[in-house]
Image (tube, each protein chain N blue to C red):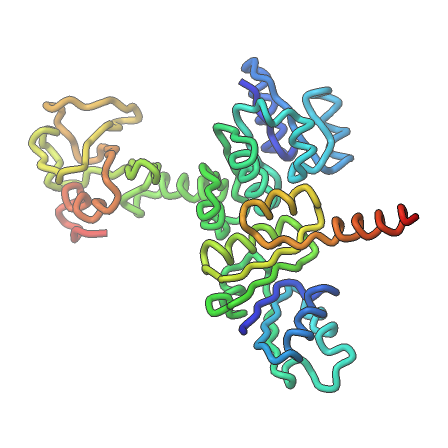
Length: 140
Length: 225
C-alpha cells in the first residue's frame, strides 16, 4: 500500500516508521524540516535510505500534497497538531483526491464523533484517554 | 434576524457594529482573551469568549436558532469548519465565509462553503475596474445560477458605438443591463444609442466573453481577449 501521512509529530512519525518497516510505501509531509529527525530517530538507516519519502510544505497547500503523492495514495492520514487543519485536509483527500481510506486525528471528542458520523475515520486521543482513565479510576 | 459572527478582528467587530445599528441580534465569538476584553467594553453581552470551531461554544451562542453564520477569523481552516458545521449539523440557512488566502478558495468551494469572500480578490477586482487596459472586467460570478455580470468599455469605432441596443445583435444568452456615461449609470431601453467611451454592464452565460468582446472592441485595436 502507498500511505501518505501529514504531520510528523509523535503519532505521525511512529505510524510512518511502523508502516515502512511493515513493507509499505510511505510518504510523510510536514511544514517543519526539523520534524524529519523524528523519522530517523532510533533507526539504523536514514528515513530516505530505508525507502521513505519526506516533503516539506504547509498542510493546506495543494501543490505540497500532490508532491507528497496524494493522488496515488491508498491511505491518507491527517495527523498534524491542529484539529482544524486535519479535518480540512482529510476532507480534501476524500473529496478532491478520492483517497480510498482517510484517517484523521481529532483531539476534540465532540467533533471527532460528528465527523465520524459524516464518514471520516476519526481517531480521538482525548476520547481514548478518557475511556482508559475511566476504567482505571473506577476500577473496583 | 439572529446573526452569529466568528472572529472579532477588524472585519468581525465592524460587521457586528453595523448589524447591531440595523437592529439585528448579533453574537460575536472571539477566542483571544485580550481581544475579547477590548471588544467587550463596547459590545458587552453581544460578544462571547471561546473557540468558535468547538461545537459547545456555537451551541452556547445559540446556533440552533441562528439565521446567519459569518466566519471571519484569520484562519481559513477555521472559517471552513465553522461554516460547514453551521450548515450541515445545525441547518443554518445562510452562511458567509471569509477567505484569507485566495489560494484556498477552491477548498471552500469543494467543501460546500459558499459564498466565500476574499478581500484580496475584491481589491484585485477593484484594481481591474480602475484600470481600463484590462478591457473586460468580471464584476460578479453567480456560479450556482450559471450567470455572470461583466463590464466593458464601448470602443471608438466598435460595432456597438453609435448603435441602438436593439441593433447590436449579441449572441443568445447575453443582455446589456446598464450603461455608465459621464459618471452616472442608467438602464438602457431598446432605442438607447451607445456611445464610444460608455461603460456597459452585461449579464451573460459564462463562456460567452470571447464572443462578446468584438462587439465593443475599438476599430483600431485588434479584437479579442
